[in-house]
Image 1 (cartoon, helix red, strand yellow):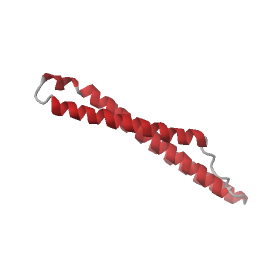
Image 2: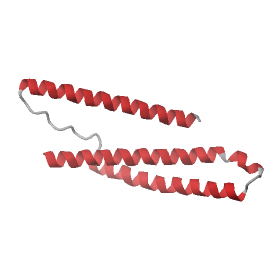
Image 3: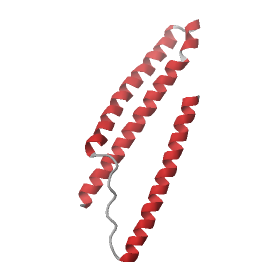
Image 4: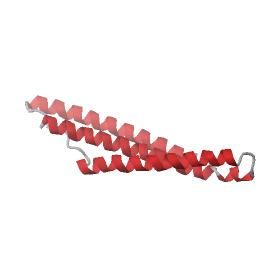
Length: 123
């Protein structure tokens, strides 16, 4: 339960900071318009190599996390009604952390790669 709260809080903080960044870009664009210049495109925070590395590492983590979750459900089917089920909670949390981290890495990498593509076509 504690890990879920950490992930929800991290997502909320990320959304707030992203909104603040968009607002700043908007206000900066207004200032550039007032001066009569065009706003330069935003520089991506990650390099292109790191962006694609995030996607690859996230995909690998997703495969392993899915395998861990699949094997844990297999253990549940195999040991139905036994006392070993009490020990399965931490394993499920770990696989959930792997899957959530993998999804975050993939989304971050794809978003940064999209920014690189947008910057390359604009410049």
